[in-house]
Length: 482
Ligand SMILES: Nc1ncnc2c1ncn2[C@@H]1O[C@H](COP(=O)(O)OP(=O)(O)O[C@H]2O[C@H](CO)[C@@H](O)[C@H](O)[C@H]2O)[C@@H](O)[C@H]1O
Image 1 (cartoon, rainbow, N blue to C red):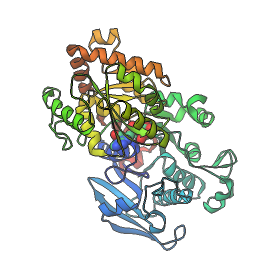
Image 2 (cartoon, rainbow, N blue to C red):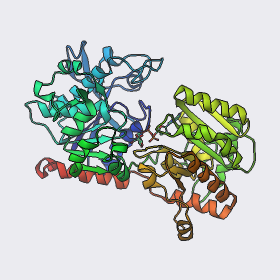
Image 3 (cartoon, helix red, strand yellow):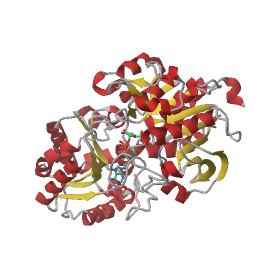
């Protein structure tokens, strides 16, 4: 079976968050399920620097300039790169200028990516006719509206929601520039609260909807998590499922990780203490036996970072040290920096994005704290499990699905892997830190938690099999055998 994946980000070429990890790892995992994935991404500057491909399709004028689709392979990933310099060759990130402001033409940059995704879905490439189109998040969602509203045969489709909070919502005035037929501007099409909703359009048009954990798939049917889309999602409940993310176990392998000071494994945990010492050095933390709790996160309200900022004094008083890596909202950065200044040696902060340091933190910290208010899946707790960095997580979405709380019953049964606490509650977060510090002081309990977590299957194997089964159920047997 051949699948076209459409996404704005893919690891290792361009990443702002977990979406890239998933779109980079899933194609490799699907290969062993007999599924060939080609991924369409925009030709952002970092992508073009790492990629060389052969031109397979050209547009004389695509949204105001010439464009080419290039085909090639990087890091085992088969890519289709949309080289459209007038849209994607810009300093800054994929979505925002160097000052952090969204590009004003994002509606067009991602509608165009989707336009090309639909063209490929309709077979315009010749060299590659997909049996199914798989789109990720709002940036690729309009692909499915183009496929649905055009008079051409369209393959079945899946949309995966990595985060319902980002929806691609624009004014009605852009509709006439999208090149969709007038009937698409309806409640049954792309219309959303009087404007145009990209994610909404994709959710409406997809043959199937997935999100990245079973619990989040349930949560988004409720107004509290549905972000205005729960009504639509409920009408599509029969087509909705949750498939928990895996992680790339080659990139995230403590026995071969080049970012670690010392490798280690479940059987040989000793190397960990060298990473721990390096972490103390890098974060200017006091040496000593108190547990180091890591935070690796976008610094936002979704991730509950304000709760951490609010509880810094209590976390330190509970006997923990904190190592925080992140970037995000200015007021949260300021609050964390103020806490770091108050607790020199107990709290260390790196403001920024540092992939290598994030590996060292998983391999050296004792625990990882993830206090999200909502979390479709979450990856850092999965890296934590694999690296013996015990996760303490809010009981929501994929965090609830992947960490087994160290309650009495789970400890007695030897199945606990971490700590869960009520989301959106500062008191509950601090209580969990106290439980964590107590457990840490009992070496037997703590080593049990580490080892049990390291045993957990966080690979893509099971989840890739679920995607494969879903794809097969949507593609007719005749096409599948082609
Ligand atoms: N400052 C920093 N330096 C280095 N690395 C950093 C970093 N800040 C974050 N990261 C990395 O970025 C990734 C974040 O992934 P998450 O899944 O935790 O959240 P995100 O909200 O981006 O993803 C969304 O999509 C993913 C994928 O489906 C879902 O798991 C998730 O719930 C959903 O919100 C991890 O690989 C993490 O290590």
